[in-house]
Length: 284
Length: 159
Image 1 (spheres, rainbow over the protein chains, first blue to last red):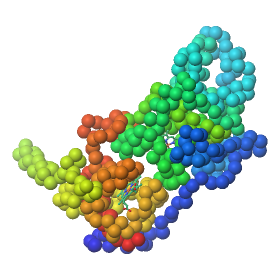
Image 2 (cartoon, protein in one colour):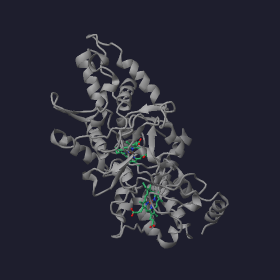
Image 3 (cartoon, rainbow over the protein chains, first blue to last red):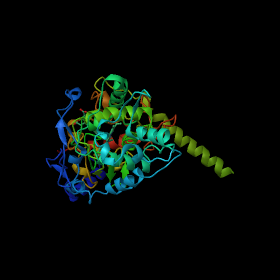
């Protein structure tokens, strides 16, 4: 050993003992406002049977304090944005003199819609995310401008549509006309990108429950989106989260709203089939 | 003017001296088992620098995945990879150099990134910007930084 190395080892011995972080999901249960029971663990969909038995919401991998914020709407910072979207819902905009309410009634009448997106649209012959559908209503039925993908207005509206579906099982179709898109999403999920050569599966399928530095890896489920993140004190969209994860592999990312992220959203959503719609959720 | 010329030629000599002994990422030769026997630079590694590289996020960030008792000063060690305590005792320098350079040569399909590799990536980015990589993408660690990390790993003798 060199002098320097001995000095270094001595220093380390003086330092605090290494804190070994304990991994794995916890066994807590989530009931929102004392009445909405959230299924946070469910049998894995059949197509995942080779790789996992159970799908688990990201909620189980967060601290007790963060978890508690989601159990009551008065504590959930994401609900402020849901209230903003309620106002927007009733606001007349565009050349046709209509609001969302003009066609759809109360937001509560949309219960269950969020659980099935992304899904196939027959007329347009395309897979649509909820934001694409909302924008289609805005441009085609209201004569209003489309909202920016994952921008504030769009995310708030998705949070409202999610909030009224809470507790209902995610049930995204994976066959029929969406199958090709689903296959593309699957391919993206397993592609090792960037200079770190990591895929979604490397972190969220092979290593969920493990710590990566200070982060407790979850299964990367999207049933809780939009998520209010304590880290950036804002509601976050699915594609923005994907973008951050891809960037962290030292890769060139895709853009929110891109065909790649639409396909990836369909595939990742389907991995959570059976979990409850949970958004807006609280994460760190 | 005279000093500038003199200075430039001195720097030129130093630079070419470094390059002469440094193996480029694409030229590294691995044994069948994934070891790299020759030093990448010919200059002995500095274990103190290696320790710093292993805990620096933008460099090795090895503790993101590995627990290392000797690096307990740096907060939060991950559990994606095995603990590295004692690894210098049961692995040779050539094995460790191979693992840090490109662990996939030894552990097929491992999640551990290759730290001295510049080609063959899918959608390589410019560090953590999310933008496309420049044409002359540098390796995550320089050749000497790999040697520094290997020198530090060799000090991990007891588990």
